[in-house]
Length: 311
Image 1 (tube, rainbow, N blue to C red):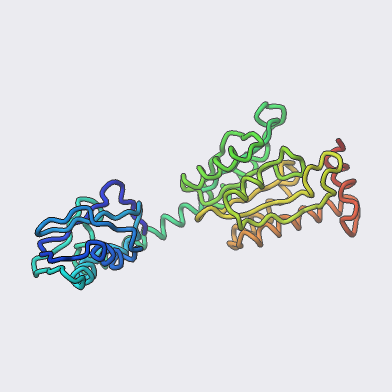
Image 2 (image 1 turned 180 degrees about the horizontal axis):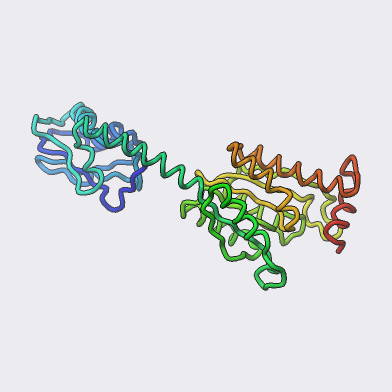
């Protein structure tokens, strides 16, 4: 389980004696004992009988410091010029004080932390945020039917669902909203809209800015610059931001309804983002091709314009 140190990042070791000790080596020894890089711990004060260290990271895993006093003292005592005694111990006014727990007490705490972490991860995984995009939705020109549909469908699968206010077709705004959703402990963010071939469609660009390895497979390909097609095709997307799964669906409601069974299966079976994105794109492509009975995508421009309207 990860612990935030907040502002209590100092720990001190004493009593001890120093005789020409290299303070950089002392910091590196403490860092090594805590599983940190050498530059992630520094000595902030060296008195005649005490060394004070500052841990330069905002969070630590429990196993990096809970009941790690013996390991830290062994590492520090091996530094030339540092003399420890039987009374030497490690202290902190913050959560780092757990470093001095007895081994059995620390083991029990780590077990509890692991159980708490697993339960927290389970709860986060079942929290979803739904984001609709498009100026038409913001202006009230069209009704957002996707958000309530997805909220109901996800709730039936055991998700706690939050609905965000509709967003403009703006890459930065969409990326911020997704990031905020992940920071607020949503394990799933689903967007609708902004995945088309027009220049205003920016949802997949927002996804790519958050996850450079996000999967964005094509549904249809176009000749770039033809008609209103500023891009070379329509794509869907799925990626991750930390433990949060991001899924980018189209805007038309019938397409969201069509794709829901695929999304449901992917969530139930815990598919990787790439497999989920490809399965969603395939399902939507098959709908387009069936609409015209095409066996290939050679007339994708005509097909898209028939379904969504010509310029």
